[in-house]
Length: 281
Image (cartoon, one colour):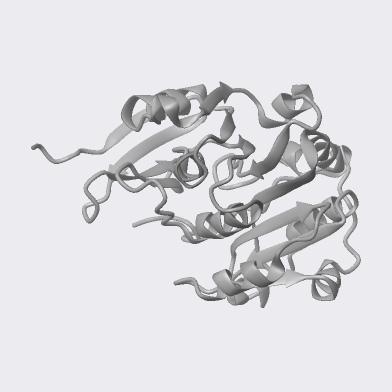
């Protein structure tokens, strides 16, 4: 059998590369313009390589009983890591994946196809436009993982966007977002304040070094109207290969401080990562 070789293609929004992992027979890393976007193992779709993906997985594992199917909307497609994960951990789930880069969707469908019976439907569309047109009370979980290059687009950071996300979610639904920032956390605090204006419960999962302002990094935002199982999330996050902390309640309110919700007119993308923050050699 021949060794897999990298695939490079110019898509709608950049240069995408699929690179095989030399240590895992059918595992691939997707980068767009050099920034790592996704890692998938076709033989083991429940394997989550990236730390932030594992933290999202911890939340997805906790939102319903083990194995119970969910209706999930993924804003941002990449190589469909989390849809693959849910298809095997919660079989029977109905999943919509919204990705603005049609060429990227076609690349992934060609080289890393999802099984036809996985319950995953792909949509080439802008994330905000799609949820604005989506039916109310139609999703159990909404995952926001949209990056234009290495930055969250501004139109996916405002109160108007958050309000649409809340409308699409069912009453006990959960919103998750992969964000990135560094001290003094102007962007991250504003995102927490924005979702706190609409949701009764909020939590943040991030490495202690990031929260202490020592480096730029990812943070997972969790928002819901129902109680978040903080104890389970904290235990699993602390036991991870790259331990993370869960902020909740008074500590999180203190972190938000005087930050205010973001209006469309004032919305800005997440900050540009410093050189080397997410790059690969």
